[in-house]
Length: 392
Ligand SMILES: Nc1ncnc2c1ncn2[C@@H]1O[C@H](COP(=O)(O)OP(=O)(O)OP(=O)(O)O)[C@@H](O)[C@H]1O
Ligand SMILES: [Mg+2]
Picture 1: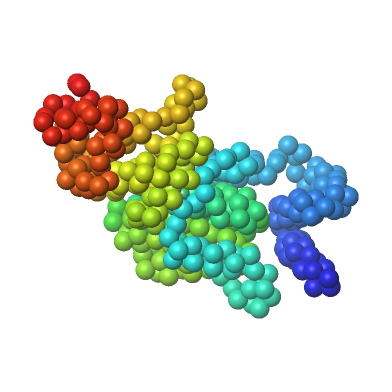
Picture 2: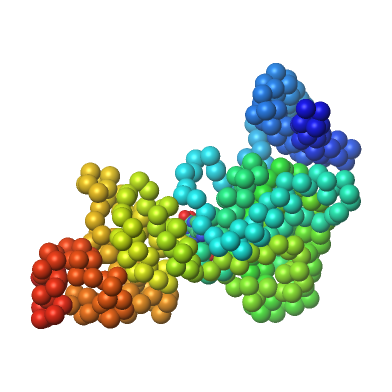
């Protein structure tokens, strides 16, 4: 009982420290942001009265320090030249997403990161400096942004995304200013800051003539990262990890590599993403095999289209529908990874033969009949004797 009481107290003590810290440094934004965060937290834990009192205090004092209409949203940092916002708030509450699907070793990294992020108060107290940071890398569509949203919602913090390519100004001097504005914001706001397209900062190195200036930009980035305390949760994502400077790379205490989903992962994705569409075990097995080389994003897209069709036609989609969408999605970037892409434009009989050569047991005549939407007898006859399966 006493322990629980202490734990609850501790939860608020973290915010209290932030507020005192902000007050002593005359950082009014930090004080206000964390007070408002504390009010939300108190309300969530059942102390509505204190929450209302705190919010009232915030309201009453707002006009004394700045115009009343300046809200947190409007206080987002902006590019020093164009005045465009450097970061964007992600409304997690408006999103309903299927679960994150990862390999066990990826979950191990992610869970350890989350538990460290949750215990930042102890890190603070023990004087262990540096931000709690995670670098995610891997090809497009493998779940980096999805994991960022997962982390923010697990930590019950707001998520802000900064696209680094937008932050790099044509005037390098402004880039440094932008970086400072970004980190200032992170220091005074209870949030997860997600630096997307992180390689933009590294790519600069080869793109520009002004090497000296550029070094300063990268250095200012590193210094800013180092000066943050453990209360700041920084995530970064890149498709080109090879471009990252080793000094920058080293700054991230946790690294998560995301890749093309393995067979068991694809099986999990299909069964979770299809919901509420219900395919049987054998159908799922076919989809898992047909989607070899597809990303999580591709599978999610097939499921989204099937669900859309289910709603508009009021009928459960068939395996044939799924197969057609898969063939469509298989066109374009990354064709070499997907055996399905090599069958593009081929007639149905050739496709059926390739599938049977691939796995006779899985691609039985009954399965082919369903994939092409013909009778089993037709599938049997035509794969053996020729003629197109779909009768075209
Ligand atoms: N491992 C995964 N678990 C759950 N969902 C996934 C996974 N991978 C991809 N997705 C789905 O695909 C969508 C697109 O993935 P996401 O935007 O996270 O990719 P990304 O790695 O950030 O790609 P990019 O490099 O193009 O930004 C996600 O919204 C999610 O629905
Ligand atoms: Mg992304």
